[in-house]
Amino acid sequence: MKDAANIDCLAHIHTLVAAMPGPDEAASALARQREPQLTKPAGSLGRLEEISLHLAAWQGRHPPRLDNLRARVFAGNHGVAALGVSAFPAEVTVQMVLNFQHGGAAINQLCKTFGIELGVEAIELDRPTADFTGGPAMSEAECLSAFSRGMAAVEPGLDLLVLGEMGIGNTTSAAAICHALYGGHPANWTGRGTGVDDGRLAAKIEVVGKGVATNRSDDPLKVLAGVGGRELAAIAGAVLAARLQRVPVVLDGYVCTAAAAVLHAIRADALDHCLVGHASVEPGHRRLLDCLGKRPLLEMDMRLGEASGAALAVGLLKAAVACHNGMATFAEAGVSDRED
Image (tube, rainbow, N blue to C red; front, side, top):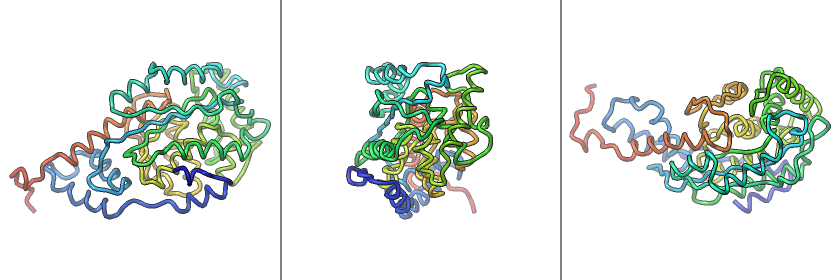
């Protein structure tokens, strides 16, 4: 995705979003033709059937495959962390990136379990974004650089891309993006993140409201630059690059979905190639999923981030593909189909 990742202005991103391909109708038709022939009552595997059809349509082939799996965790630091919006200090971002690299985090164990290759992209951790209560978190050039980095992280030939993030303070950015895009009161979008107490939660809500008021824009990409972060911009870039390459995506929790929502605000079907791995206990995530028309695959009371819920959901995707591709048809098994 190196050529398309040379983004030189926000208008270039708008052009790429407008050019997004749709699902492959021929592959979709083949999947729909096979599904009713399998040795089971129609619809009896529920959402597993939907998943296999989704993967075929967005991989552009039938049968779908899940051999080449990648997880990309983007990390960034946030200026608003200095305002006390998190229970952890900003240096934890760097420390957790090292933990990822040494194999000690939850995402490492989940990727090993489900055969996913993990890559961690730490983006200028020594240079946090600006405090967005006083102006934009990122300049246009900074946002474009991070967006391009996310696009470039989507290598050719992937069967599935799993996305996640790490960044102390980034639930504040996620809440601000959602508040800017969908309105309502900042408290509707702001949760406890890493586990802040009531006092810090009240301060966090105030920061979200002030940040959105300071950085208002009708352009979702300027919202991203205004109140987002480098890792959120990279996630949005990766989602776009995956769509252009016909790679299905599994989004993680609140922060990851908020980053992707920027593309949805530009084009209503921009996230049709994406599944959402789980519903975070962050209250804004479920509200955001309603806005996006997305139903999560899992509800496990998770709020860790780092692509953990998305990686866990890959087990469901593998089960769906195994059933769709491996089950016998009624004719092959000599089993009588239902009577008309």
